[in-house]
Length: 449
Image (cartoon, rainbow, N blue to C red):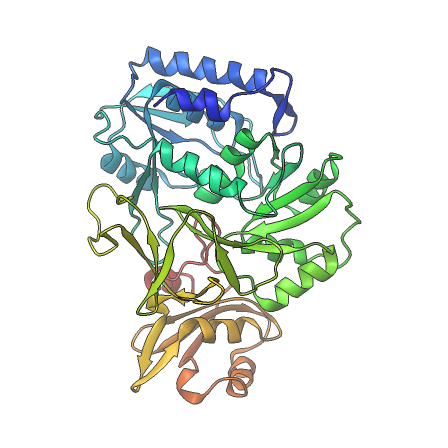
């Protein structure tokens, strides 16, 4: 189990650059950092089959501890550093690690992409791994309680190989400027692990601001791909006259589909393709459209089987990705139910994601897709962001400069009466998950009013 770290992730010449977290780090430097953390974990009694939880922000310490634990042959649980102490305590009760690696002190404020932290490993009363999985993650919880999702080293390696077969992915000698968190699947596999394997430098900007992101792109001569989520697209598209960036090759976004207006604004202002990816924590990348040719459809990633069953997208998987208490209906007979509404074109093989299955509701016997209503509201002038939910009726939450009466009048011209929200709540900010997804849990939305 442990040999794959050296063979797949750490191989290469000592002087080859691999990471840039405020300064370039060579592969030799990274191997030394990993060896140091490996010794510290082994001193705590971590052995092959042991369990380690990381509560570290994006940092060299995070990368080094992750690879060190894997190199030992331990199972690693990833906890987002933005979780509260209460949430971390609940997670540790569920995961039962034998060691926890935390950071010292408080993190500085500001929109930072990485941190320089001192990591502190400590023993924890836990249990050895009950499965052969190497990484355990908690789902984002954007629509409810999080699930415990686990993947094997083979699964991660297979995903890296899928990336390498997708036309348009960053090539050896190029750069990825990563805006997504390395704790979650897009930044972890599509960013960190892919770059380490492919010989592509991974750069994290000093801050998640427009100026800092564009400075990171301009900071090297090699072609650069931006990798983030829709929140980052909206951020970058907000600047009217970005500088000329000959190094910028494309931007790729995971998560929800970028709104049409934001998509057009970004591509017009930066003059590069805006690619889209569809994936899940359970399996990683599922489908892509890195050139923006098929929007809103995507092509399944090489080696994956995707089909539609009664309007739901299913992914072929030989084993369940869940451990602990899970909904038995999510995986059965080699198929993972995504809970996403979608179709697969029998002629082209392209798939189209239509939104969450739970976004389709019945109003007076008529079917309404809440995603359609949400996109219509978000497209109105003066609306920065919007979420539409169903709670005995359609309700909307929006960050907008326009008033409720103005928004209702505009929706009256765009949506049939039965599709319109019975109430629009104006809020200063919409809650998001740690991965940047808008939260749709009604209890959380109510508290934002």
